[in-house]
Amino acid sequence: MSKKVCLQPCLGINRPASTVGRQACYLAHEFLLTPERSDLGCAPALYAEVEEDMLFIQNDPVIAVESCEKRCANHLVNEKGEQVAVSVMVEDVLRANGFDPDTLPTEHLDIEHPAVKAVAEEIARVANELLA
Amino acid sequence: MEPEFKVAVLGCSGIGRLVSTIVRQAAYMLKQDRPDNVVLVSSGSLTGDVPEALEAARKYPLIVIDGCRPKCASAIAKGKGLEPAGVIWVADVIAKRKLSLAGENRKGLDEKGMAVARAVADEALERIDLIIAEDMVSTL
Image (cartoon, rainbow over all chains, first blue to last red; front, side, top):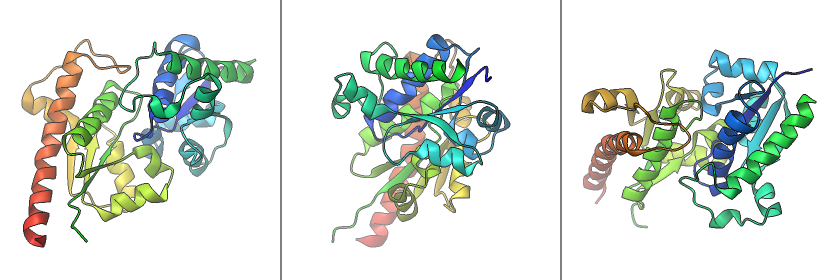
């Protein structure tokens, strides 16, 4: 059984959902799951094959946090020879929780923002299933 | 057709370190400062091989902003066959301007972090404005 999951956000920059997903990963990693049960994967570092980030996707089930249907995190993980266990689609989670993704700011949201919390809670829910 | 005079900006915009958040913020500042000239290309979309992102990075002069030591944004540019018109490393900017990041947090920037982001953006703006000016005098 895995002890940790790897949270792998797409890390786009031009869509509010990318920013929400990034912030949600901080909330899930640092508080909801804690670093004892999660690793935080960095897309540029994984592309550059930084050892730590390669080990995350090799050793942990990967949760891709995707802001759109292009699924860049899935693409990158596959390119590095591994498979994503579950994808969390940020815009779907936001809509299911009553948020219009297009009305959220692109530049920054506090981790206390309800939209960030909703996505972080979904990430944690999926992670807890994988770790059960 | 009117000439465009655009510059693409690729910041590492990672997640692991404080400096990732600074680079991301600096990129947004550049877009605010030069909305008609700056095209933000995300590291995520390049690593995802999104055609629109690759096209923008190839079409316009590319400024790369690297955060921490692996210099991942530069690695992405190299991996995708992109030749940057300029590269900025945050550590250079911090050293040159004698800035501090003590007490800052990767989840959201406070005063010192925003000051570093502003300095990084200003450094990039110098390059961007020069590229645009050179392009303009050679085109019009």
